[in-house]
Length: 241
Image (cartoon, rainbow, N blue to C red; front, top):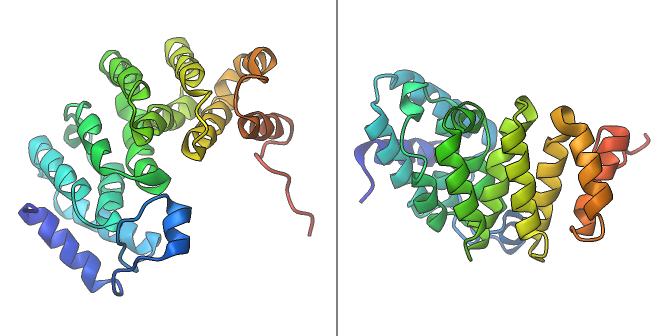
């Protein structure tokens, strides 16, 4: 049974969206088969931003219960809303146990849901600050048989590594990359590309060294996109108008 805040937010979604949909093409593109509400990202973010502004007094325990309720909800829209709310949460509201992510990832399917919950402002502030706990959790996720948890073990680090320099964090990212580099699922091969590209700004020599030593052993798409990013600043060639 959704908690009261979940129910309020779901009504907001429904009043600002069309009928829920399931579409074969989008299922393949988004990587999941959960129903979605026809609401665009800017509208969802506007609703989330205003709701969090109106609920600044929401305690960390209440906030964690709300996020859990949304992520365990039926629609992909509810699950993604949890990640958007995280972006607009206060410092105090973010102090829940990171181990909740392991539970949440049992209910997230495909890159769109995983990435919306596992990237963004929350990861930039909380992962470096609580690195000891997060490192253990990330390694645990990378060893899971659940491909969504495997992907999360990499994408959770993408935002922090774009913003700070931390040797242990960067080495952990490469260790996880080594562990997952033989996986063929596109959710993993693209995540490896993403983590390497995210490291270029602050760890460029390390990325170059890693590619030189491992280019034959990591996914070709990761090598191609990372080399392109190193050489041009983008992961693919810009189209000439």
